[in-house]
Length: 569
Image (cartoon, rainbow, N blue to C red):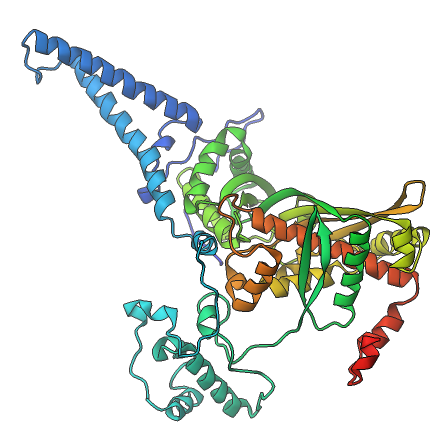
């Protein structure tokens, strides 16, 4: 989403030589007003002041009214002190209702996409998605604005109108009310326009209503991908059978061998170091000094409570963790980080960021928001900020492989593996100028699991950042291997995770949907499984390279052959 708002340029005063106090908390206008913004103090202090004012005013008025009743004095006869007490009582009551009441109601009726997915995913009697046997009415038809317009009754007439440009292809689902029929008509129109038969692309057997408005537009079919299983992966005392969607021969078999070596050595362990999704808008101010003022305000500890309150309004699960700013001239890049529950969370953090940008407008009316994303996030691009600071889940996974397992299962020795990892993964990657690529093939495993479990495949770019470390332990007899992955971006609700096949793969891992008792734990567990799969894949590939088996294995398994006995052997 691109946001550009032109604003007046004023208030660009110079920064004093000494420390400059950041401007007072911005006042939110309209529906964004919160009573907590009334005083330039931390929210907890403001709450305490108004609570004390409410209690003191009420106690004073009750005492005065009791005295008037005893002395038969009319209650409506009030003095200056009583008027002040009444004013203080009303003002504090309005504040307390606004601060606590509105926030509570908002938390109940929040319409965040990820929140809805959370509740659906954590239902006790959740219905399994399946391909419909009868035409499925498109969800967009629920509103009167999307009601079908008059269309030709015959499919042939509709196809001809689409080919002639009389009916836009993108309105077929809305006007027909049948997603499968719309895909079929669009497919036939495409065949006539291009002359391509596209016979190998299947049409039937897919629930097109399930992707409407959230996964794919203008569908004409679906691509079939084989899913293999590697495992069991013994990780943190649990056994996982890891689904991998891939067309690369040897990949699943190699990862499976790594899982075997890990299991026979006692298993692997993992730890999640950080968990926070980021979004970094960019704003232009009249001068670098003015940009520095905004930077100081956003990064000031005294303002964090106020920013958190504004940011957190957009979701029950999105909670602001921090803001990191960077400047380029008079442009300010603001990297917001927040927890997102079991959702991957890009929409969630974007909504919170938009709330903060609107909030800042009163104190910084000269702030020109160039874009909600300024590439300092950084999403779907290799970036040092993700490699260093992390994005999504930062995970370390490790295992100690026994000497006999290295020789028996991996067909090599500890010394050769350690030497190969240093020369290839560390020195070789450094010579290549790699950014987060100090590994053998982490992206292979990450992408295969991402596709199988409904993650965003494009996020394999930063999710595959990995450094693989190998060293001898126990007097050089055994092998310690670890993978450090600072930016695994996964979720178990939202996006492609709700599709039938992808949901089945998540269910196989025990992380389908949201965890109601501990929000975010399913997504964190999935991230550790990804890291564990990478650990197994790295171990097996490095062993194949050390033993000189890579070319031989690919020639055997990565070639099309109808002689299945060859592969079975």
